[in-house]
Length: 241
Image 1 (cartoon, rainbow, N blue to C red):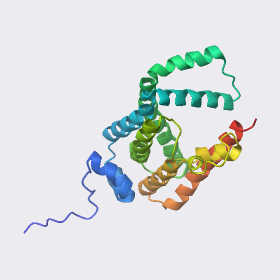
Image 2: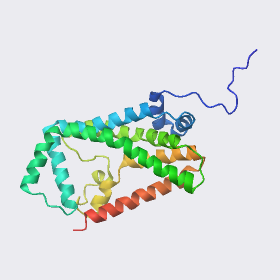
Image 3: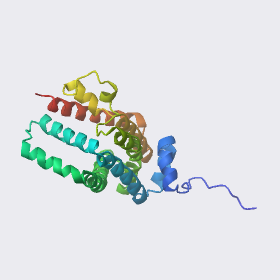
Image 4: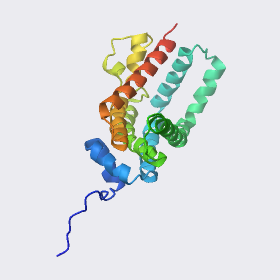
């Protein structure tokens, strides 16, 4: 009678893209074990990028959303010490007519590049500096699948902002603690700390731990430390006036 059990050490059967999408949310460690064994990138990259692009563009299909996006752009320019004149403002306002399309296209083009660069940095750190043996494709697959959390965030934020005609992020600590002045250091810092980014960092740390067979906690602490450092520096710069 033939033995129907899977031999020890045999890689798990590949999961389809939807099973991986749900698995990253509900069981990230087990899902990343499958991703590492079968580093498939393209379909998941297309799925998550499409969700993020549509979610980012959706609020700008309303007049209220376009005005909110324009006000946000002006505020950011002024925070970096730039003055927006009447002519520049009018040109920016006219550009809002195609904002849904330019936003979606920009996200679709930039996202894979950013993920590739991030994967390259992590590959260099873990392989060259720490003696890891993973392939770049495996690292890129882990980074891409961690992006499920970003896509999940846009599935919430995009429709929510569409309904309220806003482009501000409702999932930051700043949105949860509105008593702080948005222009102050603490207000800007809280506005940069996002629930879904924290979740994404945790999931990314789990994926890297599975890939390189290391403990999750030290990786997560390092990623959080870098995130906080960047947030503090940007908040300090933008609130310097």
